[in-house]
Length: 181
Image (cartoon, rainbow, N blue to C red; front, side, top):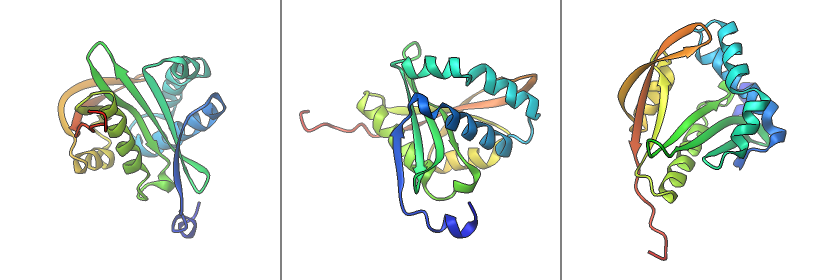
């Protein structure tokens, strides 16, 4: 997509993923990882993709009631992927993956996905959403801070043979009250 096509984004829709989207998900992941994680060798990114986002793993995710995958489409073109995860053990609602293709960044797609995560967390009686971001991924880290995420934990994160620092943070959200309450 060139810059004149970017200006023509007229419609962004979000939809639940299906098994037919697995290639799209993998494509979005590897393209965004290569662009954002220039500090990680490509072979480690591919190893991570095959270990955690193989078709077998994606099938497990789609069947897990605690996971919801969402595809964003800009003018009917897949442009982003978000995975939401309810961690029952720690009682946390996670945005465990949020990746917008580089050519679609800056057009509100990420914000729309975060708003969806907030709404879903609220509907599930959570007062915050949690996520992790690589400390070296400055652009994304700054974006999350602008959205009022507070980072409180730091831990090593392994991608193939590469170990990077990973920040864990949360954003407080307002609980939505349903009409019956």
